[in-house]
Length: 402
Image (cartoon, rainbow, N blue to C red; front, side):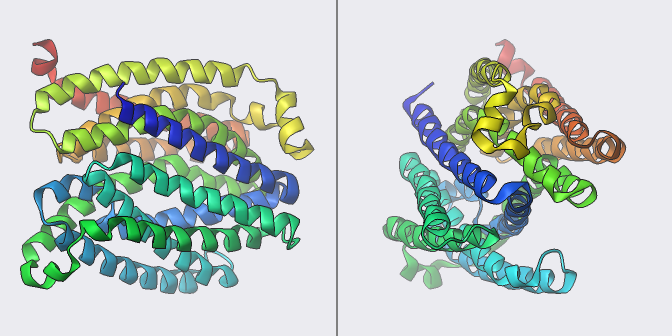
């Protein structure tokens, strides 16, 4: 694996460790219920970020090398404002969450979307290291904010997360703007802008975000069912296990990010298909080794680290292990398709996984609770992964055999 992948793995490992430390602080200081509230709040923010990313998301990595960057970025800024306002009204009228949290979620969604736009610009310009540093900057500031809330301000409820996140995302949005402003000719926008770029950006962005939203549903739909139907404390316990296991995906996601950037800037599709297989084999091997290490960790370690309320973490996630491994296929193979601007194999595979998850969650969660959630997730991961593997094998058979 090249230096960009190794560096991305390193930075994302550090970022995941910091996120894990934040989760640990909430688990020990606030308990499973508040940890569950934080998880639910983060999930809602992610949903609104995905809508903002229709114009400002990862589709820009494919589009920017083929267009003037300012013609794509400025509409993305404006679209983020529109989505934030719509999201605010939607939350106000649907009562999905506590009313007092809605303004904070709207602001956090806005800043997160702006950061995502700036990271995407840097990735499209092959400044992968700088894009990675932006992400870890936000998490580091957030950790510092949480520590201040817990140990100096004596705030240990959901507002510790809200205040620290507002500080982290606002500062990171400003810093990231300083890093990209020389890459975007803002003054040239009015001179060169036409509806053609906007239509193209919407088309690719909608397809990319459709795939992303389906992936988010595949990863988080059962969080809502587990939390709302079985109790927020179950979600708090389960989310700790998920945080640990999903850390395994640092490797395939790092590979996916770099491979997406490389493929987007390449015209050698057959060569990239062969490279995809090479990277996939490495990803599966490394992920299997990490999963084995996690599996061997005794249950008592979780109690020692997180507290007595989390004694059932290992038991609750035992059925997730095979799903975490097989989802490597989807993560790596999807980066090939997004890199060549073909989203339908990703969309169809993700939809198959979501439908599987909904069906399995309906039958398994009421009876088996957290174990049922793990089984449902593994089933959906397997269906999505095998579906995209079939697409890839059929469409690239000639180039892979040559």
